Length: 245
Image (cartoon, rainbow, N blue to C red; front, side):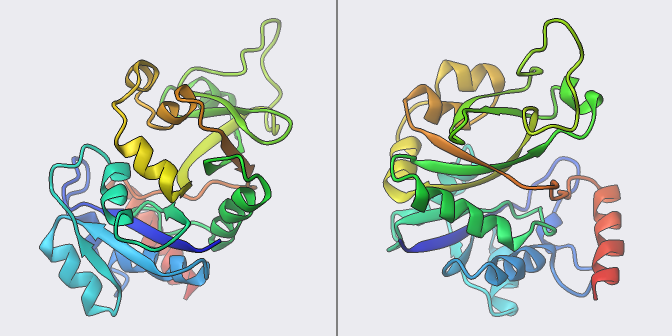
């Protein structure tokens, strides 16, 4: 089973414009993500972008970048455009603003697909850390079957505990992390399929796959990788990166 890693990167960001090119650490933010993706040793790594500045930055540090159309409604659609020209069985989607992800998570994504030939996708989750997170609509919850396949994803607190508050942390109550591995044919099928009403209601793309009967394996890792969405997030990452070096 061959794989390729694709990192979608956009210049526009409401809370932190131009974040892929932030370089207080001496490296572009997207470069940190790229280098950790290379550490995963899953296959060739590409940055997919519609911005020439990001394309040039990636090439400047020796990375591989691919220009895509500018009208994609989501990162998944951007990755699908790239996947049409990639010779790989599996496409791994890593977010361009999560430079602290554990490369071992990429290997877990691939192992789940290798172990479950019937699954079309794999993703990651981590045990919920607090009741506040469990009740927050900004924290996506995942419920999985005993074999690891996803039953549902929601912004609502699921599984709902009728008679008490849930026991947290527990692997029964999972915080979904937005990284995926797709079998290439499944990715192309999803990109060609209109959004499903469940997806539109929850604003969760992965529900398109579940609604169309595509099984998703969910792997559990100990901790979440912190993303960079705000100037405060980036400042915290700079502290972490300086400590790591």
